[in-house]
Amino acid sequence: MGGHRNPGPTGTGTAGNGHSAHSGNTHSHSGEPSSGHKKNQHTKPHPTGTPASVKPVPTSNRVKRVVVVFNADTSTGEVFAVAPDGSILLKGDVVVGGKDSPTPTGTYHALRWESNHVSQKYGSYANTPWDQSPLGLNAFGPFQLHLKELESRGIYLHGTMGPSWNPFTALNSLLSPTSHGCVRMSNRTDIGLHDLMPHPEGIEVKISTDKNDIPTGQGKPQGNP
Image (cartoon, rainbow, N blue to C red; front, top):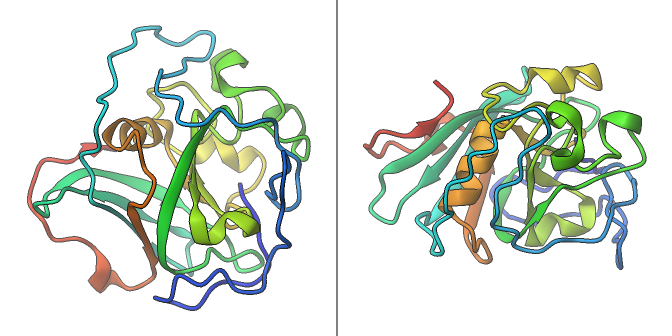
């Protein structure tokens, strides 16, 4: 999901002159309203019908930076969580914006997590909180990561429809094969990234179309198989 007008220039982290700024309790996934925020919710939500086992979430961050590299022609790519020593802690597939609503590239900074984001714009697939929907049928998934420089444009990193263990982003194609500018992760990756960096404020998030930006660190990443 997500939405904006004009992409920021590559490598600058500049939000540009896109989406109009929002304030109060209104977010702009293509202008849709949002429910009130639940900041830094670290208890993992589980929608009805999925396993209810909840493991403790670490209280400190293990991630130094997040890197998203995608192919603008296919609107698909990968997200990486990189540790301070350069090792890859998490790797997962992503879907980004299409040609009519491209995902901006640049270097940004995480602001906060929001759990159970809802919107009235996309009907029943988005207006019920993920953890209250049967099988998690909410287009934004369990967690949504806000970015400081893109906050006013409604561009986020977030999950997808389906249960917490869902390793795919395909269910969101019921609404759109691409996002409206956001970076869409599987719920497995979304929850994994949240758990690795429960206090995200200030963590660098690089979004790029350059394959040279793919991290080369060693490690055994969790995430999609």
